[in-house]
Amino acid sequence: MAGVKRISGLIAFVICVNTAAWDKCCAQDSAYMVHYFDSVKTRAFAILSKVDTTARSIYWPSVDPQLFFSNLRRNIRYPAKFNQGKSTNFCSYAALTHLLITYQPDNYVRMILALYFNGNAGLNKRTIKPSKRVREAAGTLSRKGELDILHADQLWLLTMADTFKGYLNLFDHKYDEGNENTFWAATNYKKFNKMLREFGKYKVEAAGSDLIRPWKKDLYGYTQRQLEKGLVMLYINSTLMHPTKHSFFLLPAPTHFVVLYEIKKTDGMIEIKYWDYGLKTVQLITPKRFRKTIFGISTITQ
Image (cartoon, one colour):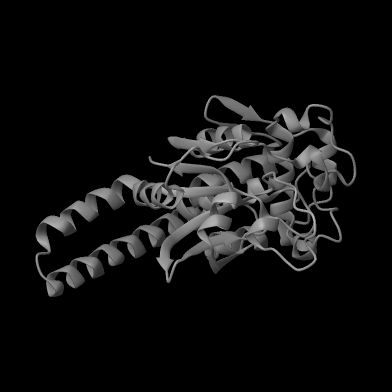
């Protein structure tokens, strides 16, 4: 996708030498993107149409078929609504899944259907095979907001957390009830970038870490340039992003992943548009707080 954007942008620059021509080219580029998203969604629904959507899975005893397949259809239609649920540590998996459903819904559908019907799924050169504890837990999560009835999302998020491990999960590898709220489901920065590369076969550029912020003199300029190259995910301290008068003590560490869509300067402030918690948000933030908030910038360039 980034390649398509770069090539179409170059064509527009070379051909559109006046405002009217530029507007015409932008309209054509936008029409192409609409056609692309419609076509990948059509492929995803075509795959879904070939399976028995009333069949109960023998591998996921608590997953309701009706809730599972209605959840799948909703995700394909509205990828921006994908949400990790209330009080969970699934934010990294949700950010990755939002991108996967947006740009590769057909691959997403293939994998999740394989998990549902076979209990495992192929992922590049490895096989995803969630543990029995995870398969028994999917469909039973409660007090998680809308996630309670989104059985496909429960199955998917639990599987992702069970499959990928980092140093934060070192002492908690086996799922127990309630672990979706603990370090069992947590993600460090290296683990997140590994998931991006494996799930979507994406080429990823990463700057930052779990402890030290990106070493960039002009962080705003770097972020803006990365957004021109491809799709950008930010690893942030969410309390700094959304400070309140009750935030007396701020832990200087990253806690959350979001997907960046736009960034620009407005009257000395930085205006950012990003995806988070199932919706897109526009926010003004001071350059100082922007620098303190960002711990990682991951760019999908291919």
